Length: 197
Image (cartoon, rainbow, N blue to C red):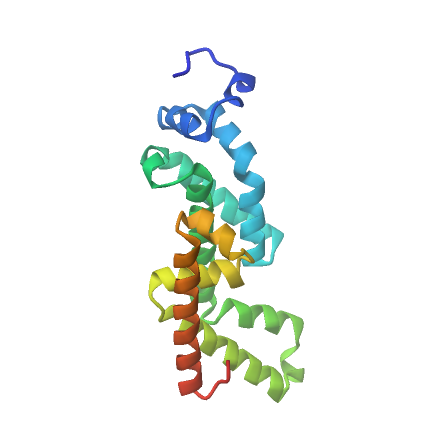
């Protein structure tokens, strides 16, 4: 392992998994190196999901504080440090949307749209678009978690099948299969509700 008295330059030479062992022991400098390595991609995911720099920064900060506190729970047998971090950021972004939605009693997407379009000029088409978006989110929420997750990563996160496969540490065929099944179920739900997918 690594001897006490290590400096940050030395830490940069360690693998993520070795850094996480130091984080587990409370080494803040090791955690800084982990953040330096993965903070950018974490922000990128959060920004793609949230659409706002301020919210993305909050999500990333919340995720990394959580990771610092739960560093002892990282298990290298279950995947890479990057996958663990991105999974945490993904979950925190979704939690952020849920909190915002609960706080305002409406969908976050609807709130953003309302900010852009004054209520007095809302057209019938915009009302229909909001309703359709709400129905899509409702149908998505009813999917099994494994199918919903790959769809969210692809459509909200902008990741390719290969990237999702690496993040979730699943075979590409499994990711594609879950995507196919999830999208088929979404089509069925939306068609039954009169919405053409």
